[in-house]
Image 1 (spheres, one colour):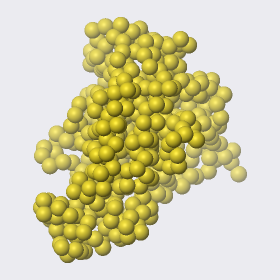
Image 2 (cartoon, helix red, strand yellow; image 1 turned 30 degrees about the vertical axis):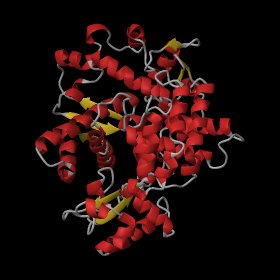
Image 3 (cartoon, rainbow, N blue to C red; image 1 turned 90 degrees about the vertical axis):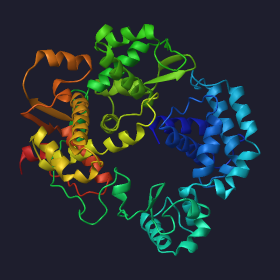
Image 4 (cartoon, one colour; image 1 turned 180 degrees about the vertical axis):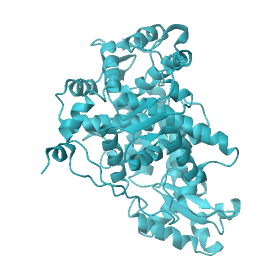
Length: 495
């Protein structure tokens, strides 16, 4: 769940406490928003257009979501309260339908939605599998070893023994009679056709699970203490923070009008581009993209908020200002910087992203973390192109079937583009290369650097202390061994 969704859920629960929503409201609305985000590639939880309510329940919840947390009985009432909350607090997106129209959609679902939730013929594979798990006393969100053991027992069943769970899908889907079920954090796959039943081949964001790769182990690294790292955030890692502060400052105390899509009016865009130091006018194509990404980040981190037809300064702007001034607690400064780094590594899905691009974004998602892991393991500066080539060779199994050079080029470009944003954020340094003023001007017009757009020999890349802190933080969360050596200050002081 995104930061924006988490914040909205917490505010809604506080608003709804003691109301008609009753017990379990937090889980229900969280599941409904997550279900909608998964189906619609992460839409704004405050934007509800005509047809969205019907699509959520009948096209997403019914076929995919198990009937837990009172979804069948109270899901409609919970969403009705949620929409009232958005309207009452001024948070309903300007691109939304009128609340009365959304409530009518809920009214029309009053009979058919609960009936559809109980109709197994409407269920997809994941809902069938998770319902069977729950019936057998296994929590799909519980111990992964227990979940995998259940999946292995099911996969060992004879074809007709599967019918209780798979129903009509056993006859309609070729290979379901003998395929292997894999489960991964709310996702289910049936591996058929002789393919290897390995999770990392189904979900590219997962590490290899075939046993060929031992648990990741990294040499100890020395890092400054939190206070020194937080000071670096306010200086070396401050570019994105300065951009967010500039965005909040441009919005100002009175706010600014937005269009019916909740975005800046065209007439206001040149002024904001100028305030951000981005190219405007005929060369503003790249600047517009950078500004749009900053806009999404500002909303996600509550630096700015949409309020009906206006955008206003949000409370997150106060934290940004405190971090830049060096007055924020060290842990809060590092947490904000780290979460912003994650957004740069895994960019927020554009609100109006082209349909069919989700698979490409999913495939590209792991490449930069893999590169950063390799750089962390190198323990010092590395040749950018050589490290990229080595990574692509080692991870050749992740390249789709087709032209390997083409996909390797796409992955390399994605890595360089994100490294350029991480360099501005103070996570990496990239040095060397050749000068080309003409190409550099073109890159600047697109809001990036020369080497991000065109590969160059002789570039050296390294992690900063903040970058090492960020990578180590993620490695530890993934279960890797990434020990911390004596702090830099302690080592310098000597025995």
